[in-house]
Length: 466
Figure 1 (cartoon, helix red, strand yellow):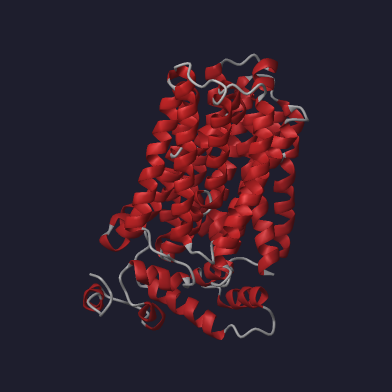
Figure 2: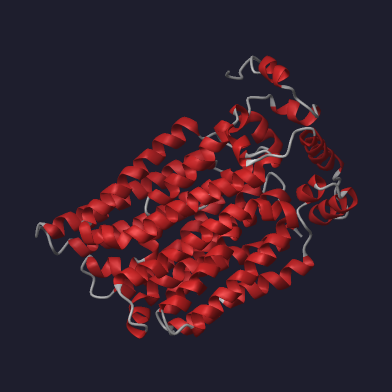
């Protein structure tokens, strides 16, 4: 049931990828058919992220109010509406409206899918299963890239409806998140959902007791507001979550991904289609490798290796455009540019795409998870909008400067992870949150309420840094 539930949830991730991948192979056709200017198409490409910002802001509260499954249902309905609007559009206005609706839907998916998977999965499988979120995102993106090379943009828009239909159907057959059910006081439903997920013959008493104790310890605290996220006890988790999302986006992924075809053409390739197909084909197998490694190598090493790869890819692409602008080694310019972009995509798919979302789903205590998840997802989508909207203008200004800018953010990502991000592999969600708050992990399982005074006392335990 854990695997079935994960498969249903990641239909939303596939939808996410379909939305993101739509703009790259369709740019020239939509621009021609609807007579759009560069600024209008940049708005069409980036308005997805504006809708996603609003979806991100509401996602946490929505998931807390109507449950993880309820939030996914609402998101799927927005995506279906958006794709139909794109399919029937006759001009920029309706096109943008549809793109905005799909953006809202994937903004909610970006938060609720990894949270749902993290909350239903046993700790030894949580990393790999949550990484399926990113795998299905890149699979959806790759399928959109490949199909966009052989079908019209309207047909491609119509196929985007299918993942949401599968999701809506599948939600009737899977349980709600046990942790959410426990949080709202539905004890019988909580135990039934946990038993369905672990099997009829499994002993769920220890896990159920741990979850219940953690929930009970949080009931004595006031309901979290956005301002509460900046209290001292949450500031480290917020710094990690916000920092990872900012570095993920400002490394340039949405600019490079949204306009991949035109980037390859500007580098000197005879056709952007060849580069786009290579882009699509490389994402999925590399993401599979990342999913296998995430529970073996750990989160920190994987994300640092991934950031190192984006660092190298940006450097090669920037160098190629620099050589082209100075008329040097022109035969090597397309090779360097294509190699740089493909190395960048491969490296990003291995870790930078999935690991920040996985860590975000692990580090926040449940009483602030809704507000914190909304803020962190909002930061992610603000960065996505900034990059996707400015990419074409930056490339017009200086292609080499654009990639050197992203190169700098990749370097800062490595330093940030090395300094601040903890390893979360092999720990329960409660142990991770206790560790971030500088509490001994066992205390989180045995002490329902921990006062500020007792926290200060336990922070001086041997081996636990103040």
